[in-house]
Length: 78
Image (cartoon, rainbow, N blue to C red; front, top):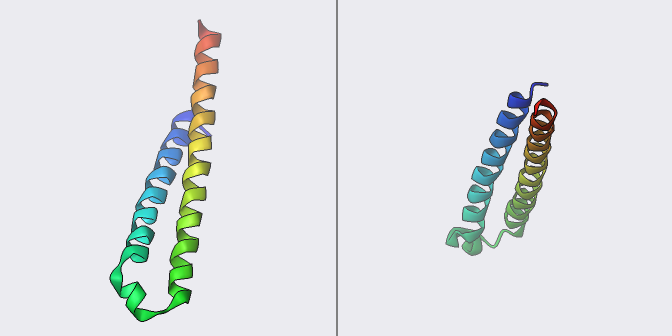
């Protein structure tokens, strides 16, 4: 995998995770959720929020690894 491709995929993963987290947070915060009394849908939103957190964390690790790889390559060139 090329380094720039890894950087792009990591950034895309972070963006998707943050967008999805915003959607799940809005679902949790909506007043309609509380009126429904449907705890299953609330649990799904909370689970989704946790999955989003894991996606952003994993994508951040990929971004950090790619950054370190670029740093190593630059050090070797210098």
